[in-house]
Image (cartoon, rainbow, N blue to C red; front, side):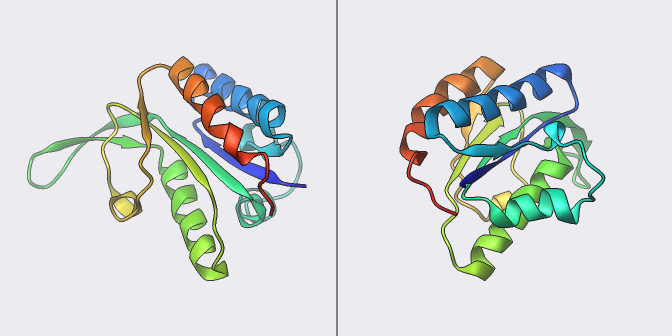
Length: 151
């Protein structure tokens, strides 16, 4: 069974609702199951759940919400995304490279979030958004092409 990894914020109720709506849409549009950590309720740890789901994913959807402003040593400011999501992007990138397989990605980034870390080196071409509803509208169209994904 194909499984799509959903990397979406879980800090606010709106973020959790968006992640759950993405899971539902993935099933409706592609017939694939989706992994969203908010929905996991078991005694397994990080390796069994998140890293295992990333390793086995046939597709990767990520939504980067703002997490706060930082000031850099040069005095400039920058809005960061979730450290967890940045790490999931990095792990997915590593898995794709090591296993030499394609991992289709659909990425969304809040308009206020800047680029940093490994995202500076990737061609994610994220879709900018301001409202969660914009994510769901754009996602439905892009998922049409994922009905034939294989693990």
